[in-house]
Each structure stands twice: as C-alpha cells, then as structure tokens.
Image 1 (cartoon, helix red, strand yellow):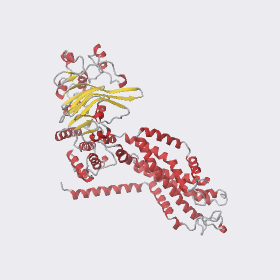
Image 2 (tube, rainbow over the protein chains, first blue to last red):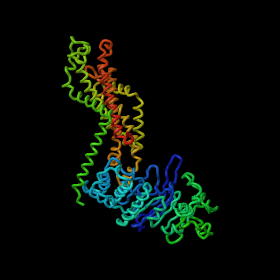
Image 3 (tube, one colour):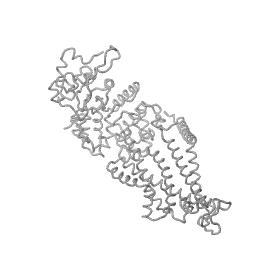
Image 4 (cartoon, rainbow over the protein chains, first blue to last red):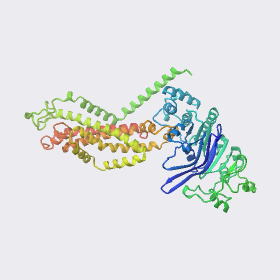
Amino acid sequence: MKSDHLLQVTNLKITFKTEEGNLTAVNGVTFHVDHGEIVGLVGESGCGKSVTSESILGLLDKKRTRCEGEIRYKDRNLLELSEDRMREIRGNEISMIFQDPMSSLNPVFTIGDQIAEAIMIHQKVNRKEALNRAVEMLRLTGIPSPETRIREYPHQLSGGMRQRVMIALALSCRPSLLIADEPTTALDVTIQNQILELIKSLKEELNMGVLLITHDLGVVAETCSRVLVMYLGQIIEEADVESLFETPLHPYTQGLLKSVPQPDGDRGRRLHVIKGTVPSLDKIPQGCRFAPRCEYATDKCRQQDPELEAAGSSHRVRCWHYKEIMEGGTGRAAAYESN
Amino acid sequence: MEAKPMETQSINQIMKARRKLVIRRMLGNHALLFGMLILILFGVIAIFAPLIATHDPYAIDATARLQPPNAEHLFGTDKLGRDLFSRIVYGTQSSMIVGFSVALLSSFFGLIIGLYSAYYQTLDHVLMRIVDGLMAFPAILLAIAIMAAMGQNIFNVTIALSIVMTPVVARVIRSTALVIKEQTYIEALRALGAGSLRIIWKHVAPNTISQLIVQFTYVFAISIIIEASLSFLGVGIPAPEPSWGNIIYEGKEVIYQSWWMTVIPGAFIVLSVLALNLFGDGLRDLLDPHARK
C-alpha cells in the first residue's frame, strides 16, 4: 500500500519489560507527517511522546522494549529494518535534536570536529571537505564567524549557540524528517523564539517534515500547522492548529488551554487546574484513560475506552461525549476563554 | 568572506593563550610540581643508572663488609661488601621499570575491559564476576601465588602485578564509562547514525582518559610498594639482582648495626610513592572541572 506521507505511524504500541511486568507506554498511536509541515506532539511528561519519537529512530533498548505496529518512512517499515539499515537512515534521512544543549555535545571535541564527523559518517568526503561543509552548516544556522567557531569547544558557547550547533549537526546531511524533542525547553524566551524561527526557515529551505515534541502550547501556536495531543500513551485529539485552539473538543485539551495563565485578565482569579494526576503506567484506568480526572465522565466513560473518531475534516477526538460538551450550556462549552 | 589571515592570527593567539593558562595552572599547583620534579629525578636515575652508579652493584668485596656511609661508598656496603649506593641506584631502575610497566599494562587492559563492560551488559556480567573474584584476594597474596606458579624473575613480577592491578583500573573505567554512556551526546551520536565501535573508542574513551591517568599514577605507586614487599619477603626480584625490597630484606639481619641498609632504601620507597601520590592528586585537581579553587 503506497503512502503519500513522508512519515506514517500506524498503531504504534511500545511496551517496556520490567521486573513488575510489561508496561505499555504507547498504545495504538497513529499519525503522519508530510514534507514541509511542522506537526506538534503535545502532552505532559510521561505521556509517551519522547518514547514515540525515539522509536521512530530505533533508539530504544531492543532487549527491554517491544515495538509493534508500523512506522513507514518513504515506504519502508522502520520497525523491520536491520540495525545497519537504520544507521544509514539516522542522521542522514531522519535526524533528531534533543532537549538539553548543555549535554548534547561531546565536551572533549571541537564543534567543527563533531559536525565534520556527522558528515563523514554518512558521506564519502575527506576531513577538509567535511570541515568546509561544517562551516556552511554553522552559517546556515546563523552562527557568526563560523570559521573561527569551528575550533571552539562546547563549553565556550552559550546555550542558544549550542542548540544552533545541535541543529547544524542534525541537518548536516540534509535529512527529510527532523524530530525535535523539546528543542527550546532549556532555553530562555528570547532565544526560544530565535531557535523556533530558525527551525521554521530551515524547514522551508530543505522542505523537511518536522515532528516537534513539546509541552509548551505557546510553542505549538507559534510554529505548528497540525497538533497531536497525547495522554497516557494515546492520542486523544488531533487537529490543525487553529481548530485546536479555537474549538478544542477533548476535555483534557480544554483543561490544558484553560490552565494557561493569562497575563491580562483578572489576576486575582485562581488558576484553572486539571484535578488529579497522571496515573502511573502500571495503574492505567479501565475505560477512558482520562475519565478519573474528567468533569464530564459518565459510567460509559469509565467502562469503555473510546476510539479516535473524526469530528470535522481534519479534527479527530477520543471522547464519547465531545458533541454534548461542545453543544452544552455556556458554563461548560466556554472551554477556552479567548482574550 | 576572505578574512582568513586575520582570523588565523586570532586562532593562534587563542591557542597560545590557552597553553599558557594550562602551564600556569600546573606551576601553581605545588603538589603537582613537587611530585613531578621528584619523579623526573627518579626517572633520570633509572635511565642513567650505569653512569650514576659508582661501582658494579654485583661486585663482592670481602674486605669492605658492612661499612657505614663514607667517601668511597656513599651509602655504605652490605654484608657481601657490595656498594649500596650503586645497588640502590640499580634498584631504582628495577622499581621504575616494574612500576611503569605494570601501570601501562593494567591501564591498557583495564581500559578495554572497563569500556566494553560498560557498553555490553552480558559481557559486563561475565567480566565483573572475574574481576570481583580477583579483587577478593589481597594483592600481595595474589601476587605471591602467581609468582609461585610462574617462577621468580623481574618479568614475572611485572606480569603478576599487572594481573593484580588490572581489575582495579577496569572497575574505575567501567563506572566512569557508565556515567558517560548516559549523557545526551551519546544518544545524539546514535541518532546521527554512529555505530558502537565509533561511540566507544572515539567518544566514550576520551572522556575517561582523565580518570585513567589518575589511576595510572596510583597503580604505579602501589606496584612499587608491592614489588618491594615481595622482594622483602624473598619472593620478588631474586638476589643478587638489586631491588629496594631485597636490600631491606638483607638488611633485616643486621638492622641493629647497619641501620642505613634499611632506612635508605625505605626512604627511596617513601619518596617515590609520595611523589606519585602528589602527582596523581595534582593531576586530578587539574583535570577535574569541579575541583577549582
């Protein structure tokens, strides 16, 4: 079955084998990413978003994790590929950038050496040529005087610079798909903005597909065209970014949006809180996983796990009662107070 | 974009400044400096032993037995009339050779064992059980057992001590490598397509070098002590080959008359081990980014 999407993940299920038994961190996740689009993957810590992205590149420990389902990248199922084939793809066709720029670079090598190495792993060029390309990549990511910078060590650069170096590393072989795992979480706000703009412009230039993983809804609003919301290993809502922010359908998404503090509003009002906490993986509730924390939960919710169903042309939601919630009284439907 | 000459100029300046900073820090660390000077002194003595020694260390002279230090025999003579100064000088050579070789061998094998144990779990279980087994024996007893099986000469002393000390180095390298392995940049390297061999040798290993160097000096020091102990017990470097340990062994019976036969080699042992420890401590301070004054 030929697929048009750059990346098509179908029914991905990731299970960890522990002493206490098997824990399913990701349960039946389906989504796709196309060329030239930035797809956001949002969720709390522990919902499975990082694990999902690591499984795309096969970075999970094969002895302790089991991945089922299908991850189709350009018509190849990545889950079936050998380690040698996967190594050809990593860094070359699919690249990943990580959260903490402080520890993402080897402290004992210059940044020029590290970028050159990334290039030489995949392309048959000599060191001189690789270093030239490294300078080009640094220039592309907006680092000034790259010719001098390549001789510097990671500890001599600021956090924002390091993240740019990380991006240069990841893009050095011109991948088609970029997975960005919380790339701006460890950076301050002004740098965050620069890095996001950089990712957007590089996406345009290289016609890449980008899977942006974050817990920050502001980042999502800034950069993504489509959003997937994850909770406890499942996608509970999927929509284009305008629809998600204007008409969030799932109570969890509504709660997330309501929880964002409004700088210009009634400062005296208490912040909205989604009651309860995310259950641990060995205590996944029966029925809808969000039911214990949901204010609209009914018996049906507590007994049957809802499927992801279409609720509009590009909007999907996993909730039994989303229609009623949407149409319900002003008290309940005012799920997102716009300013 | 052709600002090359000016920029090369500044790169060279940066690197020169960096080198000066390192040297200044080394000189500022008195322990490191003292240790290094003493070690250089011992190294010189070991290398130029034939030139420094005043007599043939094996030459027996029945007329000059058990002399105290004098003009002719700087450290006196032993009960066979052999010049102690020359014997101690050649003993320095033995101790330095044994210490250095053992440190080199155990660092080499300890590095390999430590790195691969940290990276491959099944290998780890096997190797670490063997290492634990070896480390359960007190070092001297283990060395004696190996020497008893292999025969007594300087070569076997080196091998026995290397077998004893490799597990120590392996353990330290393994724990350092385990920490490094969990760093994000190692995962980032895998995400870039790097294979295991490249990651282990090009990326994990260099980050363990600072620990390895410190272990090297530590093993060197311990080897000197163990070799001297073995020779003192009569199971190390065999007579008549001179060694600090067996000079003390021979000096045991005449300790009340010729105390210098015990004290002088003992002082050499103390001084060399002290120098190595200071040097190792100084290096650790220099290399550890957290220990900055």
